[in-house]
Amino acid sequence: MGGVVQIQIGREETTRSILAIPISVIHREDRLVWHHYEDGKYQVKLGYKIAKALQEEENSTPSSSGIQGGLWKWLWGLNIPNKEKVFLWKCVHGILPTKSVMACRGVDINPLCGRCGLEVETTDHALRDCEWNTFLWTVSPLRFCLPPTAQRGTLGDWILLIRKKGNEDGHDLFAMLLWCIWGGSNDVTFSNKRINHHQLIELATSRLQEHFKMQEEKLKGMQRNFAGKWTPPMNDVIKINSDALIREEEGTGIGVVLRDCRGRVIRTIIQLRSSVYGGDVAEALACREGMKLAKELGMKRI
Ligand SMILES: [Zn+2]
Image (cartoon, rainbow, N blue to C red; front, side, top):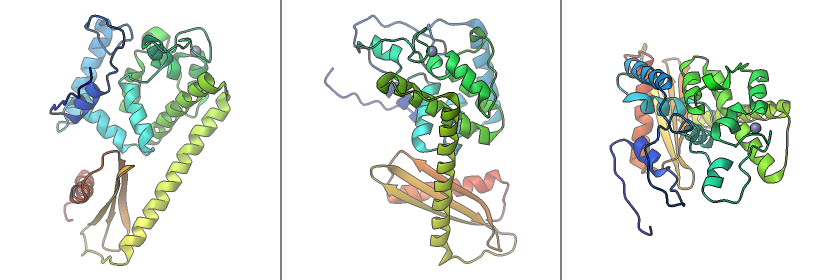
């Protein structure tokens, strides 16, 4: 097909999911598959689990429409770089270019896992089920002891399950470990470069620390920008300052600071979005994020 197909569907996530579906290069008949399981066949037990999770999701966040909205909100709330967020989203939807996917697309590549050489490299295997990875998850600071393979569900289900558990700091490290495992697996495949478990955990934690440090510096810069013209609000009132920065190549940055009458910082938001908005829209979005946060914190006088 040489033409461009424009898709306009109500939910942006749905549009993105559809656009992210790799088009098959081998001409095969279309067939119905159940995307929650690797072989595409429906499983009653897992179907029940997912339906239950969807229902809980809707009950806990009445304003969001189901698991996708909740997932997106969680992803953007993580304190990790933008590209890791997008990567995590791809993991949940099983659309990473693993060796099995590449081999199916006709790329001349050995589909076996580069680490163990025993099984085909699927998303689940590359990031969790390879013995190398299960050991890593056990010895990582998160201490994940995985159940037998048959009871694990897909990687996407596992991520959703971990998301449901508390420990937000752990979520940042979890995402960063997944990212580094993926990078490490590609290094093994494409440059025959191997690092051990300890080095990979070290890499993930130091990348996360670096990111936190950068965020802190951005926040300090933002506070300096606000400081010159900032006047405190009245007693019992919270003042929200928000700003947006647009970079054509990188997307839109949003910054928000909530302060009380003594100038103390109550909460901050730093977000990087991959979309490039117009100036007014970006500033309105930043303002909206500040209002949303104030509402979530139960603040009445703003
Ligand atoms: Zn393996």
